[in-house]
Length: 214
Image (tube, rainbow, N blue to C red; front, top):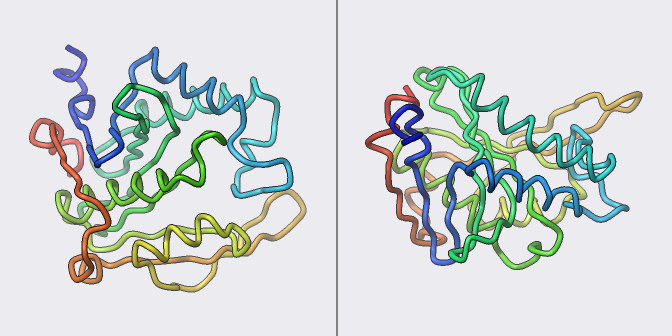
């Protein structure tokens, strides 16, 4: 089995409505086709890297390349865990990513995500990010989780507030000839531990995959 050679394939996060796991080759193709159909409205620009503003083929190929690059560049010190978000029926909804650099020392993670347009506005993004945070804080020993979001990205701002993130300054980044300002938000392990769980999260397969994170 592939999980014998690459143990994060054994890792699954289950919430009341969702399953998060590394997608199979057939499933990453489904996710690519989902992205091709659109991940935000034409009048929105929610991503610093405007990967979703090209053609449907561009979006699909970016999803494939990102998935393969995250697997190929993985080290226990610097890793990107890009999990497909699925309904129990197997329908693909999108991708959420938990990433870290020098994790054994810094103990800090960051998150990002996208959902297909048809699946937005139903609470799936909040539930999926809560599952990532449960993995990070409750199982991997993270001390902090950060995210960066544009001030006008109201949906992502609302998800972060709902999960307990607090303001942590701003970031200034270049996109083409313009400077974009993002709100930087932070959630600490102490704050996570004192808040009621957003959803129940069952983590399986971590014993097999633990060595890949440290």
